[in-house]
Image (cartoon, rainbow, N blue to C red; front, side):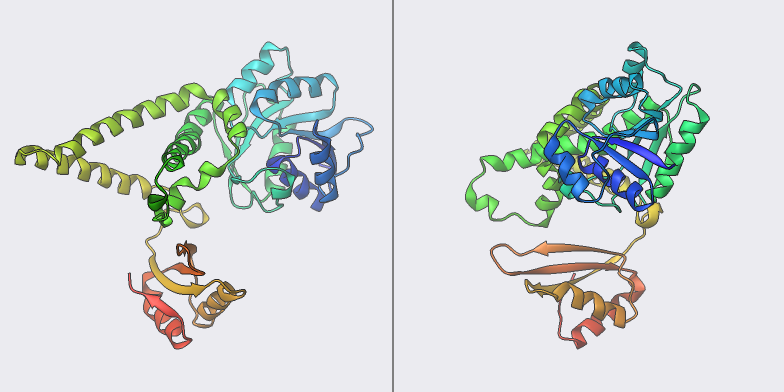
Length: 362
């Protein structure tokens, strides 16, 4: 791949363009929003100048509502030898492109499974896709050269290619991406009118659950509008589970001991199933999740404190597998939680205490 055009200079499009530009590909940028286009170009993602002829690959990174029309227009212009999109829904665009008389041989639907609650070119990063799954949905009509171009792009982005049927992909993302977004928003919406005293009690749990509720609601409206059926199917199942959970909780208030026992059993079953489901979420490097222990360290809000903790852990010969920060309410302090192999907990705890760090018992 020597040349490419990226249409859409939001988070994903600009990130793709940054990767290609740093790998020596000449990238031409397009966007109806001239401000975003100039910003992406200024970041080094590519040039605003149009290509002199067809490029090797056109990457369409526009909202789902405009995806098919943009693809069809690019094909009519003969903009590229191959066309891919990076939208989060795959079945509908392919069917709509076929209805519009588009060329399915030169088109391949793809979806990089990475992103952020932030949007726009300033949130873009050349390492956004590194180690993340990148779904490819070829059909029997897909030209081999187009598939090869897409695989080259995935390799340049250091992502992991995953080949799926388009409709199977849409059902999968409804479960692991689209429904979690709505559930996060529903929980966060409870806080809108909550008493200030209750909000001040927010801890790490509510922060974790509502983090993605900060995402751009307009972008998510486009995504959900493109995949409403599969999302509704998952939410319907969740709604049924919620109804049964409500009944179980009400049973805990009942006078009859037998009803309370049934309620306890039902709630415990939900919690156990949650444990089992969470254990299936891939862990480090996409492998089966390992069981790590947590060491919590009290940290002040001063420059360099995080770096000191990691340096001290490194000097102790301990590999940190994961990290999270638990912020303290109304204080310039918090806890850094380091996840490590269980066999390394004692060594890490002793080393950090020796260096003056306060350790919270788990």
